[in-house]
Length: 433
Ligand SMILES: *[C@@H]1O[C@H](CO)[C@@H](O)[C@H](O)[C@H]1NC(C)=O
Ligand SMILES: *[C@@H]1O[C@H](CO)[C@@H](O)[C@H](O)[C@H]1NC(C)=O
Ligand SMILES: *[C@@H]1O[C@H](CO)[C@@H](O)[C@H](O)[C@H]1NC(C)=O
Ligand SMILES: *[C@@H]1O[C@H](CO)[C@@H](O)[C@H](O)[C@H]1NC(C)=O
Ligand SMILES: *[C@@H]1O[C@H](CO)[C@@H](O)[C@H](O)[C@H]1NC(C)=O
Ligand SMILES: *[C@@H]1O[C@H](CO)[C@@H](O)[C@H](O)[C@H]1NC(C)=O
Ligand SMILES: *[C@@H]1O[C@H](CO)[C@@H](O)[C@H](O)[C@H]1NC(C)=O
Ligand SMILES: *[C@@H]1O[C@H](CO)[C@@H](O)[C@H](O)[C@H]1NC(C)=O
Image 1: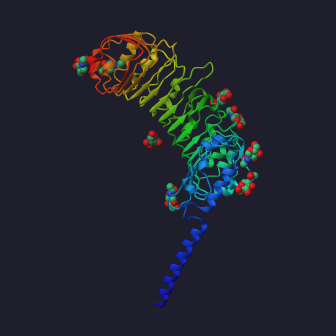
Image 2: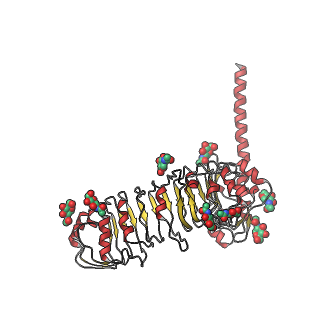
Image 3: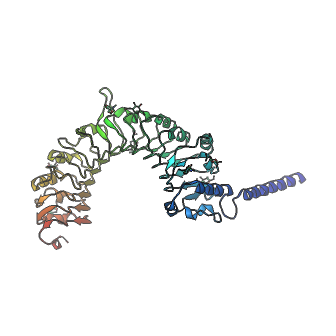
């Protein structure tokens, strides 16, 4: 009996000691750890921030208040430790990334430091210590002056799921292969950097990657489908603003990508025409953005009949292209704002009505945007528009259309948004009530 009693007392005393220790460590009245608050104040002092820095919220960082309530600081409600740091836009002068400063944040999972003029890096070995101490899952270093020397450092954070190094003065691909160590990486943003077309082959070990941003990264010529298929979990690829001519498939193997979101907008290949036909290796694409492209002389690939959203704004193409869109029976959104003025496709009414006829079986269509397309003439006939019974939004703003609207429009009972302004239509809309 006495023995059990003694053990019980010992447990109680030990528990109380533990609690006391926790309090002494700093997680007390303020629900904020002393060492973390001190580290935050040190960070604040180190930033070469300007008056705009104050605007972004560091003014709430004062010694006397609970650091978990400070702007940009997120704490774990259970442990009271810093879980997230979002410190953007403080920098004016260069700021050297010093890993030691982040060591106190043992439970840090999400770190955002965009637009801070960060220069990579204070080399004191603490980067390795930091990557061994914290299980970082989200790291945003976009819009800084890092350069390629950032790769070996970030590659140490093996638990990373999202990495944003958009616009970080990367030049060429040296060091990029380090990223292959990031087995858990699901989101990678390399956009707006001066890379080259060796980039994709160097990423082929990223077997968890779902979303890849590679717009404005100097991709030229052909992209090998083999390199995309190697990223077998890839669902979304943003690769606009490059000079891509085509996606090439080796003769012997079939390379089909399972990507469902593909953006190749602003693909200005100098003097070349983007080979739209080469998109046939993406039969599962559901969202396709081809804004601001020159697509004359080509047809829409029949293989892409799963497309639900198609963006063609500011592009130029011709009538055959428009008619080839008829394969898109599942299409829900068709955006063709300000298609290129020189495009003969929609310049005249005749062709516009032909176009409307060619989309008559796209009965899934919910949104049709034809703003500022310089369409002329009147809409006639009951083939075309009136068959699109699921249409919710029809935007014909800023064209030169005239005449009466076809009466059959009454059948579009789901229509919620109809913009006919800046045209020359006649007749009364009342009859459509
Ligand atoms: C907060 O900490 C607890 C205990 O360590 C952990 O189980 C939980 O996942 C953490 N919450 C977040 C959002 O990280
Ligand atoms: C702040 O800027 C100055 C001048 O550019 C630089 O010498 C100093 O190292 C910077 N401070 C930090 C913490 O990077
Ligand atoms: C980096 O941070 C540590 C810890 O705050 C500090 O002792 C050290 O002086 C810093 N190094 C540089 C080069 O600023
Ligand atoms: C890409 O840049 C690296 C240097 O960073 C160079 O070694 C490689 O040859 C370049 N690749 C191409 C296709 O230009
Ligand atoms: C890489 O780009 C160069 C032009 O810089 C081009 O000649 C070459 O075909 C491209 N390589 C691949 C594999 O696409
Ligand atoms: C293709 O992607 C879809 C999601 O877009 C997913 O459900 C499916 O499992 C993927 N198929 C393969 C073979 O990876
Ligand atoms: C739409 O479907 C009808 C009936 O199947 C067919 O006769 C017509 O040619 C189709 N229109 C187009 C543009 O494909
Ligand atoms: C509405 O659609 C039905 C069925 O297609 C058709 O019979 C009717 O004529 C249409 N109404 C008008 C006003 O066109």
